[in-house]
Amino acid sequence: MKTDVRKISQSELEEIFKGFGEPKFRAKQVQEWLWKKGAHSFEEMTNLSKNLRTKLEEGFAIHAIEEDKVQFSTDGTIKTRFKLFDGHLIESVLIPVPVDKRFTVCVSSQVGCSLTCSFCATGRMKRVRNLDASEIFDQVWLVNEQSIEHFGHPLTNIVYMGMGEPLLAYKNVMESIDLITSEKGLNMSAKRITISTAGIAKMIKKMADDNSKVNLALSLHAADDQKRNQIMPINEQNNLAILMDALEYYYRITRNRISYEYITFQGFNDQIEDAKKLVKLCKRFPVRVNIIEYNPIEGASFVKSSEDQIDLFAQYLVDQGVMTTVRRSRGKDIDAACGQLANKG
Picture 1 (cartoon, one colour):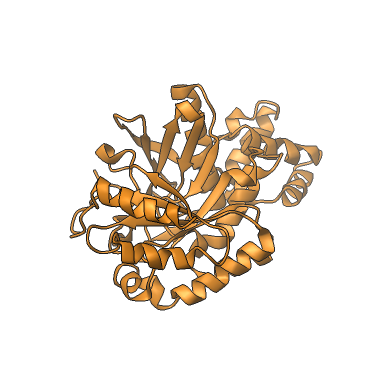
Picture 2 (cartoon, helix red, strand yellow):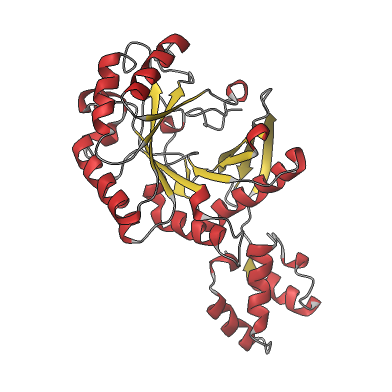
């Protein structure tokens, strides 16, 4: 198989071009085509000679992702299924809020997922592999074009909250963020990027040690270990005490924003007693709670909390001084809402 040119550094490319008898600035030109202009073929690189493009075509590949299926929700959400070079499928979701000029892409970091959270459709798929940094970058690039085409506005935010656990694809995820935030790439601010994790404590600490600039969200969903163990097996190795220590360390080192994602399930984690436990977890460092409606998936017995109960739960948090947002689900009619990504159809 040909080497993906996007896995070759600029300095390595310079050596390759030297062997071709070409000046080393050709390497910079190729890098600009790949990351600044989103080129998916050598033929697009029109400031290279035809002969050089042919040499690149013969020796290398660009393993770009391809649009496979697009679905449009009645609320404006757009879900895209992408095909990878090896035939595997992933999904990305564009969530537009034009009134706030907020256009968010939810990107995947793995093909499938290994964490088996009981309320999540992706968790019922096996993990096949991590996505390359360039495959994550492609999702952002292509959905950004989608956003401009349909809403006349580029992306404003990126969340690593699609298929897979980002912190189990750490190296590639961080490389993709470097590409997205670099002046040589999309030049987006790291403050507009959020990584959502089910809770991998040692990798949260590594993010801090690596001086990460992005925001961090913990998929919490239960404020005591007994309940969290029932719905998220990862909690058995990364319990709440361990996670809170890791998050406090992350905040102390980076001062980056931390949020808790909390899906409410009727009669399971939506009572005032649950809210009281959640408040205790919110007192160690500044945190925002995002309460999310449950989106039903096949084979799961959970029931969505009533809107009245969600509002009661949220109001208790607010009364206790916790910054709280209730997020109504988007894209449910196309299985694009939180926890529903599973390559159906």
